[in-house]
Image (cartoon, rainbow, N blue to C red; front, side, top):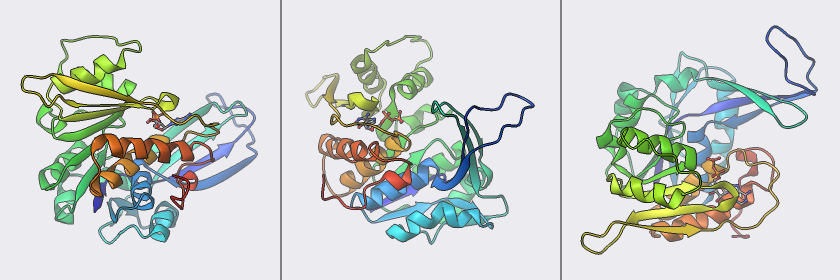
Length: 302
Ligand code: ADP
């Protein structure tokens, strides 16, 4: 079992020749509504990767909520504890130009109601808990307090969390930029720039006390780090290369990776095995357009 406490959004994506400047109106060619939000994306990925998955979040009492939850519902993700807020369903308003440059405004809406109070009201957390940085820190901490199994923390975007809570991650799943920001939170005195030395970055997160870390590196795959089993040992870091594929759209790839990783951990695999699977799962998603729409509905090719 995997339980995801996090965000769900509707992405409103308009395609246009060029992005409007301040005060300017441009005519766009088309638009599309699609489900998004890191929490919802990861819940769909976990379910499709083979784990019984529950999503705990909040949507509005509006028609966007149906778009936000439609794919999750269709895939069989448990949604009984999704709250209906008086705030609107979260939206991301995305403008994309012909060169694929974008500008994005996110309205958190109902996601901002996922505070400690709301999370406590939801009740017990079953199985592996997965969290992201798109709900208030108080809700993240309350979910961690209620967890009884390991916690997968995808701190994206990076928000302030107390050291005690950062150290509950097992693993912390972050890209290289987020990894630097988390290290800075743990130890503001380091002030280092890693410039590609990401194995050192992973090792330093372990040395700061995090039990395990996965740093995702896009087409370069990921690094899996944990404590060396030997007494007094430091960190052990293993690079896992990504499959060589033709990427057409990497939107939601990181979420696919995190959801699939959690699913495999829930099914009893160790962190390296789970990360190998998550990398293959994420590599499939970059070969199709969209976030949730690109997630594989069958595991036959994995
Ligand atoms: P984020 O979007 O959060 O920065 P990444 O870009 O690191 O996430 O992607 C997450 C994972 O998705 C990577 O670790 C890798 O496994 C997979 N992935 C992303 N881009 C590619 C690609 N071009 N080819 C193969 N796998 C990819």
